[in-house]
Image 1 (cartoon, rainbow, N blue to C red):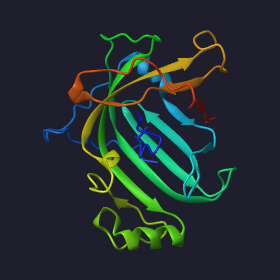
Image 2: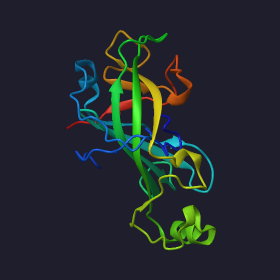
Image 3: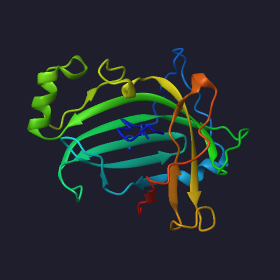
Length: 212
């Protein structure tokens, strides 16, 4: 779920719709019950406020998981406290645990089926900038209105539908001892077309479970 440092991830969450998506072959994805081990990540997870640089220099990512449905909300902010939100990229889809594959950190391999990517400018200067660029072929950007940017030619991160591979590990107090319990780590997503899986997780981007 690289989904995301732009995660643009999925990529790497407000959905939680139970609508089925479709895979790259246009066939509906099966609505099967996810394996029991993936229920550990049910709920909402949030990164810290991260400095990434650029015109909108701070980022915070929320991941929401319900059964086999995931949603990443990758928000950009103008301030170091991540209170002034400038824009948000939302990535939605479904996942399947690939329990027959192992990783070096004991993580659970996942296949991510990314269904849709949307972009929402939240400040007028951001919308104006997108309009000047004709970003993703649109010149109708306005604050607080989302547009579907799946397969936007201006960003390969927005390709959808597509299938990626990833892994996750939850620190339960004895997995990754430098972090607190109930901390989620993801790897960097890899195109499933390569038949490869990430072999490690990104310890620089821990997700903390949000209180329900």
